[in-house]
Length: 615
Image (cartoon, rainbow, N blue to C red; front, side, top):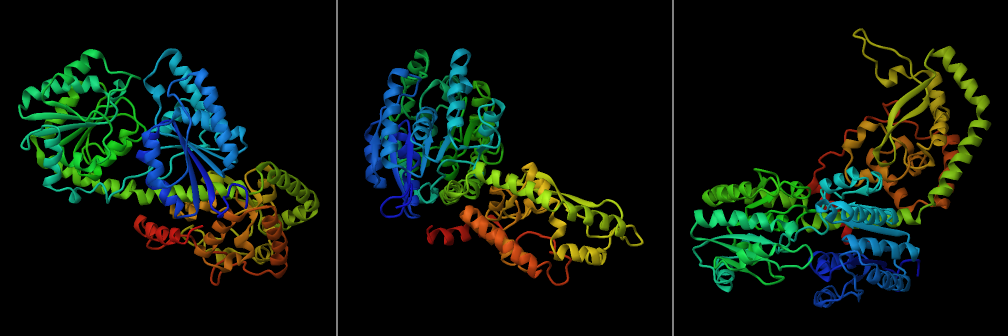
């Protein structure tokens, strides 16, 4: 089979996380989804019961490699060797690592194993709450993981901004897919309509909470960074104001980043504070039992608790920190307060407890917010598209060699066509005057604008009001000749030499069109624009905009040296024939106004149908 594929032809993916709980919580549904679309996943994490449960649920190979969360050279070196052995043996097409330690060790092991596609997802930045040498060590570890990765994703736009501000990763390399999230929310599972009064009563009875009590919930790791100190202080005020209020903490105390002993004692000794004493697998009934949820965290990537709360229409109070600001719209889908402020936290919680109607309004808006941005279907589809794009890039002409061909070809073209360039310049100067060159901002790779050069083909004719006449009225006989022979495109050899364009690629379009692209049409921006392209030799301007974009997307997925060579040969034949220069009634093409009727919902419907077809 081809490199990175199994005996069944499926693309091999290795997913690495430090904790097996991460695999179980975030990636079990994603793994099944990828299997339905011809991706074969193997998972690696530290050993634990959840790793075995993940194997049973997802039905994929799993491997245990002991990885500690903290920096520990004595244990990290054996872990690195173990990861390298597993990756080298499986020979995957993609290695995708999550969380800081797995990111560093996983990217280093994949690099040593010569894996072409190495992806690191930043779920959060522990360094945000560290100071001194710890901050610098953690920053260095993150920067090294990003350097070794071929692609870096952040689970939220605000975390990406922190990554850029700290100089951890170059801007061109780090992205957020869509609105963010690593796995999305299953809206069928987290559905308030699926949990009735019986579920609410059962959960409350399990923890000894009266059915008629008000219930405040905290869900997550019980550590200092989650704001437990502020929660405990706010709780003392709230319990006095609301005698029938109880607090349920779903999570467990962890030795790393521990809660102060006096805070822990204060909470555990309170008869109105209840603990789940560990991980809770079936969370929807727990959310259904709550009246208000709280997340007083100091840092987040994109809080899963906030998204699940929103899906269950449970009103949430959280802190205004990176990650939370992406998952919550203050005053619309929840309430945000300043971090490390027990006073602000208690006031916001009390506001929701006093006004249940406000809580219901926030909850309903929150579910719709999550449905539009963070549902599993949306997040899975984006990651599937991204995997396919990355595989296309890994099969493409290596960047160095493609650039070498571009430089040699453009240099040779400028030398060979120098007499013709001079002759055309003189003709334009005599017939049309100055300027000889037409310059226009076009969208390059990634949508970055650059100034494209062409020979001028139109006169500067204007109407009585001083406005330019339509293109077809300003196009001169000389201009028609230059366009028909494609001589007007020759100055773009200079764009190729500068590295703004390639000899072959999607034609660069007006920069203002980028905002009108659908997600599928934006794929043409994943590669360098070209002097000629697949759409040019398959119809040029005689085909529709939609057909052009489909052909551009095909090139993105299939580019190679031989495809480029074929396009260059066909371009010569196309120019000699002089076909497809313009559409009837237009000098070239009508303005692209966007795809009619495009919405996020129609795109998702299209993607669902497309994904069912597999690779």
